[in-house]
Amino acid sequence: MKKIHAAPLALALLPGVAMAGGVDRSGQTLGALFEEGTYAEFSIGHVSPDVSGTALGVGSGDMVGSHLQLGAAYKRDINDQLSFALIFDQPFGADVDYPAGTGYVFQGAQAELNSNAITGVLRYKFNQNFSVYGGVRLQTMEAEVSIPVFGNYAASGDRDESFGYLVGVAYERPDIAMRIALTYFSEVDHDVDTVETGGGLPAGLSSTTAINTPQAVNLDFQTGIAKDTLLFGGVRWVEWSKFNISPTFYTGTLIGRPLVSFTDDRYTYTLGVGRKFNENWSGSVSVSYEETLGGFQSNLSPQDGRLGLTIGAKYKQGNMSVSGGVNVTRVGSAQTVVSQAPFATSQFGDNTSVGVGIKVGYHF
Image (cartoon, rainbow, N blue to C red):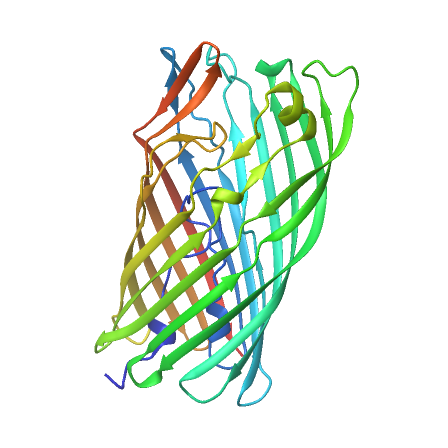
């Protein structure tokens, strides 16, 4: 067991290769913080969902666009007890594009939500077993939407920057490659300058839309279970029940409810096994799961639960490593409300998402 080393084995999920609940994308991973010595990495993922539904006998067509997901990190030791990491990720996002010409009630509707974050984290090791860490996150957020069915309603939100923070604690047993890390991420409050047009407005309405990305908690673990074999996984909780996007005219006058909101928090569970085959190659397989909760979902995020499988491989040569992974996710069936009077719903089901990713890491 003492010959197990966490670094060459721990090939966890690559950021951005799996479709997740709410508008979650990166999972806010801090893996680079625990690398040995001075380390840098860059990752890129591509996610291609296939999500469609039917309302009143008319199909929506595939209404979720593909997207790229970028990530990068730099970690360095200050001394034997202190280290820091700078991490770039794209934590939240959405890309909705209902095809035109289908006859579906929301045909031609589009929505896009983008975020970027840079996190600085400082870690203090009390000894080889216990450490604490904390940091500050600078996050940007911008959004836009166009819904032809509501009198050609459109809203455009400028980019806003705001700060959040994170704190965490970790326990490690290097002799068996064990690490348990618990991290809390605060919500980040954005005030997005918004211009709304159409929908019966005589002219564009300028206002401020509050978009508060939710607080979250990550519990990550790994441990050696046999020579050159690692068990890893985690639980992520996100407070989606308090997330909403409510432009002033859309929510207050036109429709009377938020543009985007979620009724429940989400727990995401991950469990996997990594195996080192030789000095150069290792691989992993993992399963991720979100419970189907029922109720009505947003027309801009019509999914409820998921079950995903990720297969990964890692090649290490000298100080450089290259990791790759493929994720296939079954997107949970969902119901949405497409009209209030007369009341009508849409049914989304038998949907999937495929993601691929690659990460390059280097120890200096």
